[in-house]
Image (cartoon, rainbow, N blue to C red; front, top):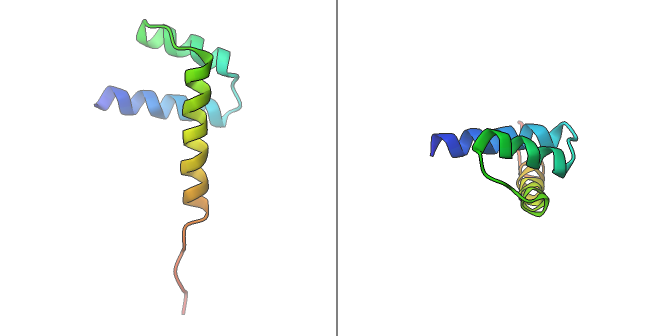
Length: 64
């Protein structure tokens, strides 16, 4: 579980820094020893976009 979280964080950082899906795929492959398709990286990025948008649009509450 911990390694999965670390992998998600690494993926998020690469995506936020504008790395291509192919480059991210190669890095994940070197980190994990298993191939990851560019499509899988792209799908993970879409999920990250959804999570980030939900966070940005969350209600902040009223300041009185």
